[in-house]
Length: 236
Image (cartoon, rainbow, N blue to C red):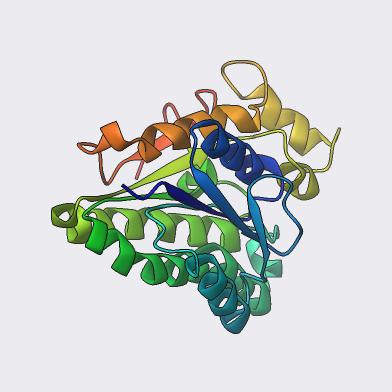
């Protein structure tokens, strides 16, 4: 069986932790990111751009089919609804949502030929609702919807599709969207039931469960790695 894993946005943070877990599992790991990756095979590509994404995928697939993928790349674009620009809405959909469709479409022929596939979409607890997250929450909620649709469409091909929804994780993505020490950031951390922020390797472990060959009876699910922050919120 093909043992190749593609991680988008895998040069840092959660994506890097997932790439490290893939290497630890003995898989051939490929990372597409606009920055060089230190784990696995690094392919430079701007996943917000159609042509750049296509070129990066061609390079990744030149070594053969890829049967595992984590659609991890993302950006937040924080703003209150009255300040949310349509340009940032479009940019959020391109990076957080469209790239997942484009990447998955490119890999599906190889997965179907292998009668095996593991697709993990990185959504967010913010999809359940969070202030100043119109562009981000809309895109991440869209990923949840696509996860459920793809799970139904691809199940007979031996392909599972699941999503991981991180809560506040100690990464640059979080710190860039939540000013350290601000009252709003302190309120977020104080609200986490386990009393701390999560670490990238903890999200990678959740993704690793879905990527495992033995997880073939689990599909269409969303696992919130959020320290309990989603408890009491009606999940999608």
